[in-house]
Image (tube, rainbow, N blue to C red; front, side):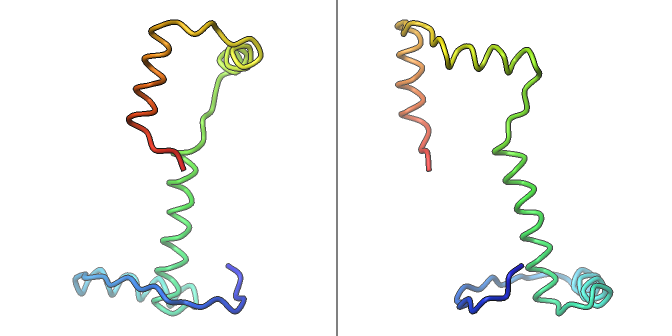
Length: 95
């Protein structure tokens, strides 16, 4: 993780039992990191995995061909498809 002059203004407080804290301290020491640094780097690495797993779609060759064909030659907008798009817009907030 880059160490540029980043202003650290956010905090997270954790409540944990003695055993959990001891395990984290031991792991941090084995990695040569402070406890805070170890928890941060470990949590960020896991966060990246979770985000990638939820934002990545893997298709079979056949499904990829069907998908790309639908993009190149989109189907006509049927009443059912229009209703599905309207429902999607109502339910999903894209970022």
